[in-house]
Image (tube, rainbow, N blue to C red; front, side, top):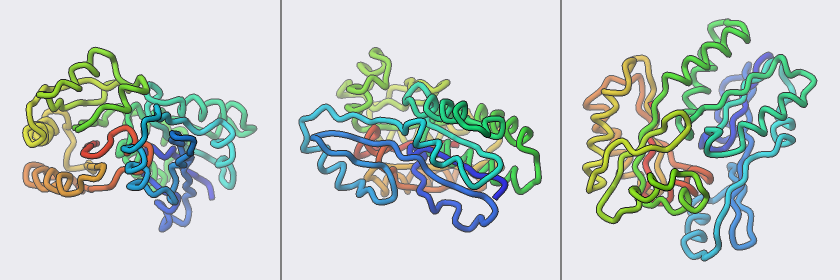
Length: 277
């Protein structure tokens, strides 16, 4: 294979994601969640629901860890050119591990590592765009440049019921974390250059969902050529209702609903909705 795409598991993708693309390789480097002396490896074998049940009963300070440079190196085989997409470098060390793997590789000039600056659907969006560009016959350098431009055009909005693990693991600014945890506030949050920020302070989840849909139109200028990906943690009904609202309001190429896997589920917890477009 000439090209291979590698992502980390914050993407919510599993190794068979591109199974119908015979000419493009694909693999996933899993992150790991640890608590109560047990490791939960975020791959296709993880029972995400059971992990969340175990987590709800635990009094341990659960932690996540990124793939090591060697983990990424293990995926750098079988192709001539490689694209690696990771979770925001401000949320995880995954990007730095991928850079080290690139610099260690004998083939480093043929490896492009991109910090998504976001998470979940944003990485899937990059995979979709990379596949499209590869099929258009562009060169490795042209694809890399266009993917960077595409990354900078993406947006992410999210609504969480709980911020516990984001706060405990230092993934949120202290002021933002304080506001997010106020009992009478359901903040609509967004990703800004890899950091979590509050866009609006709303009092109900229903209100936050409506404002999420409204803000898509303010933030996205190329809706007809875009895919909108809604990922959820144990709240498929809410995610589907948001999907319906989005489809009524906008003309996206596609609106997808996917379940959060291990890493995304660990941080968003039950009731979490993450919308990338």
